[in-house]
Image (cartoon, rainbow, N blue to C red):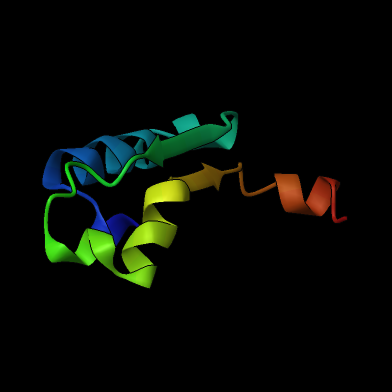
Length: 69
């Protein structure tokens, strides 16, 4: 996920991780796909992406151990 994000967003996430903030934080990232004026928008993939925005939920590392299911 991080590799595909904009530089400032990557820096922000790395700051949270490097300083231990993600150990007790649920971090939710969501986004639209920006202005979509190209021919891609008229394709099947473009229509799917238009209706399904990007969503990522980052949980603390211990969360999966404490709540496995």
